[in-house]
Length: 298
Length: 324
Image 1 (cartoon, rainbow over the protein chains, first blue to last red):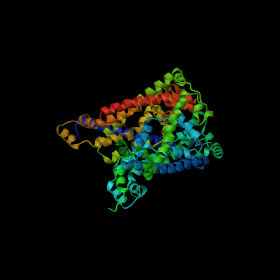
Image 2: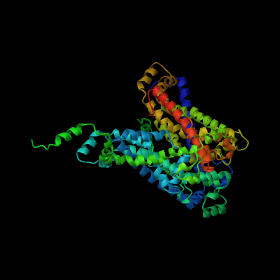
Image 3: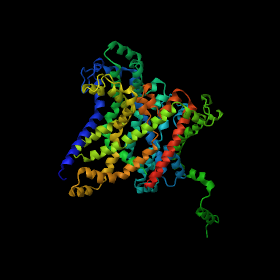
Image 4: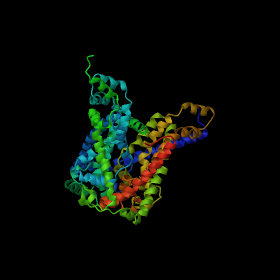
């Protein structure tokens, strides 16, 4: 590379400065929330807690982990993420494989039928009325069944399946394998990368969804942690968090007097982000690939 | 010949195009692959098409007692649409929808491109990796988390933004940003850019990596500055990608946001600047139970969106790409 001229050097300094500030601003809010969650609540109200806890404590997490409602919410989230992702990926992949078949009668119409829903929908209220008349309100199934088929994922799967070598399928057919057999024994095992990528995005969407439960679920036992967190954030404006804790935890919070709504909210937030932050470093290569598959859809 | 007399006529029949009425028989014959597709068709029919049929209730006075059978509701024509156009909220809702989505477009669209161009200039690979890792992360967080962090940063109680402003003596006491109308749009757009800038840059980085390195070498020999190389080589090469994404976002122009606004605008004081079509539908529909009215507002938006999308597709066709 050629030596940099004066103006180029100025530009590089500017670029590095900008990128460093941006990275810092991306990282700092998480770090600060983590710090506050480990700081004594009553001390945080004095202000000035930024990069490091001033009065270190675990009592915020102690309340969170001993609160039955929050722990339950955490497990609801995990259950829904695992069941929702596995079922949706399998159903969508089967559909996509069927749609790759040339001899499939009606495939043009089917495709139109699916793609149309990407651009037009009935909207919030008709969907709400449908879910309630199907009796899915307050059922775990409301997280799973409406999300079983993702048209977008189907198109990505289909593009990927079409790119697999034709010879494999043909030779299996000659050996007498059925279409379902080919799908499970040949196509799926060859689709590792695309399954990983789409599972990742599906799992993140399930984990992060707070809206569906907020309108369809009133039963406390089925509320996932993200929705609980939203209720907590909302309640911060009007009342304090003790309304959102179970009675035992609220009593303990009252007794300790060092815990504030803010410190508890931060601890809950950290618990809700933990699974994503933990898997994030390992899945980077997959999502970069996924974005690129997605943007080259046709 | 030992052949049975019926066989030749069968062979003739096979060669003829199959009669149309046999379509179900033929589908039955390939039941195995049809079976792969039908569960999906059924699910999409129920969860995507049945709600479209429910849109009819926007022309009726829907009563919750009619569950399942919407036809018992009285038809009222365009009453609910008219009510929306004449409602006191109409002006604010439309203005907010348009202003917020335009702000998100004008600032949120170029931001990832600029970041990608900058990242491409960085030669320290380790440093680049760290920057990418940090800036991609917020994309994977829910709006509850991003909203929670935003609220925490701007809080009057140990909020870092207020601490900083106090330290540099810009303010004397903490400002309650999230209850002041004049800051809401800036906060909303900033939070959106913060969440998506890194992730959005992936596509452009990939496009940039496709630029022929010889072009830069030639430019170097000719003594073109870095800035000129970006301006005259990189940007023109990735222009097709930029154009496609720009056209795609036209179709989204009425999607001013939903989750972000619901979470950041919890304070009702903000309503005159935070109410957009989607949040309005949510509020009047699911909090005030005005189902028909809310459905009508939603349909109004969907119709305009379809119009925008058709326009976007027309533009895309002219640029050599079609959306469908």
